[in-house]
Image 1 (spheres, helix red, strand yellow):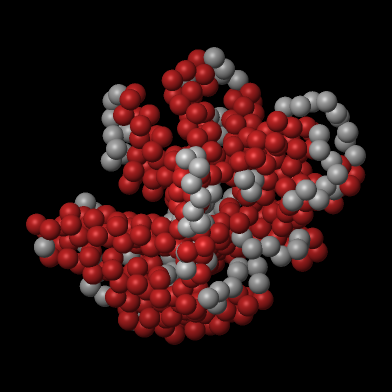
Image 2 (cartoon, rainbow, N blue to C red):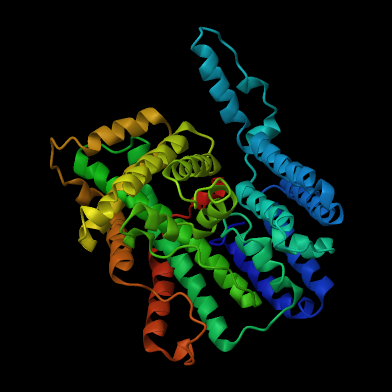
Amino acid sequence: MVFNSIEFLLFAILFFLLWPVFRKKDHSRWFFITAASFLFYGWWDWRFLFLIIGSGLIDFVLGYFITQKPQSKKTFLFLSVFGNLLSLSVFKYSHFFAQVIEDFISIFNFDIDLIAKIPDFALITPVGISFYTFQSLSYTVDIYRGRLKPTKNLLHFFSYLSMFPQLVAGPIVRAKDFLYQLKSYRIPTEIEKWNAMKLICFGLFQKMVIADNLSFFIDSAYEGKSSYDNAIYWWTVSIAFAFQIYSDFSGYSLIARGLAKLMGYHFKANFNHPYLAKSLKEFWSKWHISLSTWFRDYVYIPMGGSRNGMKNALIALTTTMLLSGIWHGANYTFIVWALIHILFLTLERLTKWNKKWITNPTILLFLTFIQVTIAWVYFRSDNISQANSIIMKLFRFDSFDLRFFNAYFDNLIFLFLAIIIEFFIKLKQSNYTIKKLYYQNNLDVISVTLAILAILLFRGAGQQFIYFQF
């Protein structure tokens, strides 16, 4: 069940019709959220409900024991981390680990087929496993650190862990930021309802109009279905993917935030115009903020990345980015994607080129975007060989054939629209301090109306959200 489907529309209508009935009491509210979220998640494959339930039960119990038996809290934390990582390893990385072992052994002229021995159930990646695993981990880690008291109600815990708006593709909501919100309910104001609908409309616009219309152009290139192959063509493809993945993922996050806001809850923003960043460090403060800050707080800082000393900082940076690459996918391409970011971030930190050598904001923005776009090539490619081939073509200016613009004009017009929105129009997403109702603002009414019309008239072929695979 995806946000841009008729099934979800019917699900959402039924949920919000019943929500006022169930939200008034704690147990009924938590039960309703959990039941609805399990229905939403089980729509893909009901068998994977056992995985999220099992993972949640383990962390719920271990979180309780951490406070009840403080002398053994390190052991309980270890069991939580081990259990969550084991679940990820089996259901997301078993194929990849087997491939790595096979490739390593082949160096010594040995042949072994580990992949064939992997059970079939472990070859299917459960939707959103990386997201809810990190959410569950944040619960036990924050209890261990004394930043959160464990909840004693299982339904309260699962209403947090399985919250359907962000369950399968984020933003990653931490227990310490959301469990307390679930202890009560609040009826959203008219301003908040308008903000919620605006977030949902803009999210659907980003996904269905921009991302889905760019997918045909990008997929045809990476699948070898296009006859064009020069540098300008591949730069256009690479830039198009940069905006496709941004529009796709940011669109999901906006919809999730809007749905939560309609319920009376608040999710933090997950994107903040990342392609306006003037350094790679700034980019990571604006892109997938919930994941970046998760790695910062639970990996980078504990490893000493924020302390004085370049050596500690670089070790923590390298570890954090490699884990981020592996988190995104079980493929060598994601590791190379991470290594490219490590290289650029290290050069940026050591040379401070963005502060000493170049001070022009426009040039900084352009150079940062180019670095990110080059890395995206490995993120999108099926394998290292394909990515290397595309990188070579990006810097082989032997042809200036622009006929592909005519061939893919219907698709590329949405790339131009995405660029205009990102670099020239900062859409208001939410504002709690404004006193005037948003629906009285003519610009807001016009922008929402145009978004709805574009969704109805210019939506692309329905595609699954890119980050569902993570």
